[in-house]
Image (tube, rainbow over all chains, first blue to last red; front, side, top):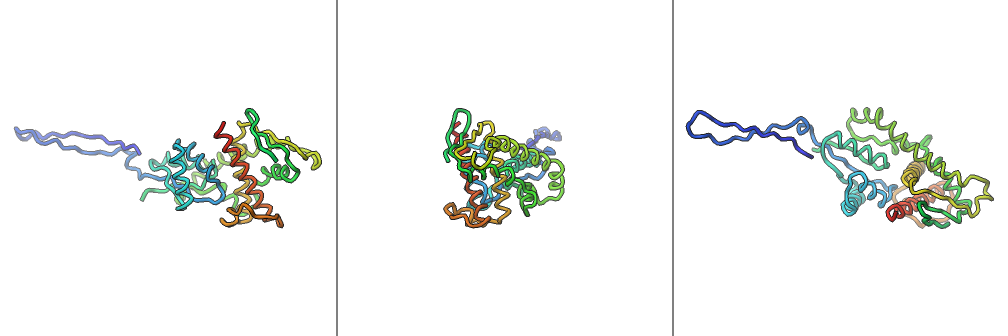
Length: 109
Length: 162
């Protein structure tokens, strides 16, 4: 997830010696949102080759990465495909549902 | 039955009447109406959050319904090539243009998921590709799931090569 961070510089002025620079982080609105993850769950009906193709298409993953996620779904029952802002996560889940994959979005805990 | 590539299309030839009929059953088999659990499998709840599910039902589900219906309609139109009586289906062939490949993958997947829900097949049954002979509606359903899966595999392989 891309973080929006602004850095404000504050300088002290009560001394003739310049005070050290303080860095204050202020987070953007998007960053304050809790990150969401896109999870794909195992489904005995969907073919492994089909699931791999869907991961490549939806996330633009290279074949090896798509296969790793597919195998994780197959062996462990689920795989986290993506993590980030809710709107984007919803978009990915909609795409995955369009391909009939068992996908959900979950808050990162 | 033979499947081959023919220019910008796939051709399924030497179709016997039984397999031709299974192909013609794809759009009907993909319909979740009246199949317990099928609707819920095709239109999955996206989250545990009620608010998200409610919005999803209003805005996303109608889109998905349109997408799935469009795919089965494309497949049904291609399958019109097989119209005719059983006798005329002998050694018939079916041409699937590559531009319809996504619609075929979707319709075959819809059909497989609905049939699997209908008969509540176990993982073991779904992984038993050598099961024979067909002695019941349930066995026929499993054969359909495997046959449609075989077609999906072939279409995927040809799409990759294409």
